[in-house]
Image 1 (cartoon, rainbow, N blue to C red):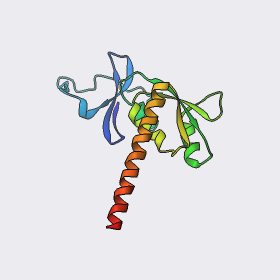
Image 2: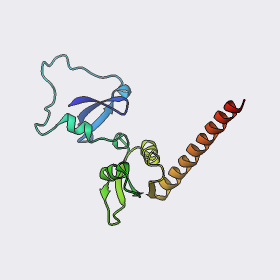
Image 3: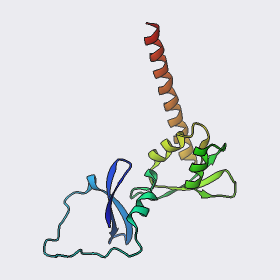
Image 4: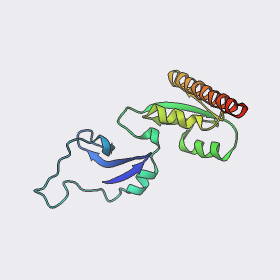
Length: 156
């Protein structure tokens, strides 16, 4: 249906006949494409209701891919613009400061949660909460190491 540039990569948006679903195929991963030189018209029809621009705008890095979507709950705190914007990306839940996300790619999602600087945290699933905490500790350790090396250079 079209090509879109998302999260630093080109994706082919197309109907997958095997899956009977609209999917995004990362162009750099497509091998042995076939061109139907015998036909002068497309082998498919783009639905009149499909809007490539709207489709591309609605995708976050963690929503792309073929993996099965995992249900992830995030708790937010504060009322900063970033928090309010982040909350809009998730689905509302019974608790007013928690949001539900459907996530296909773990790493981009965990890194996104880290950008809230403590104003967002993974509630569930437990395994993801553990991964988020581990990433947080790794990030803090890297920042401490960088800060220590900068201070050592300034003193020298």
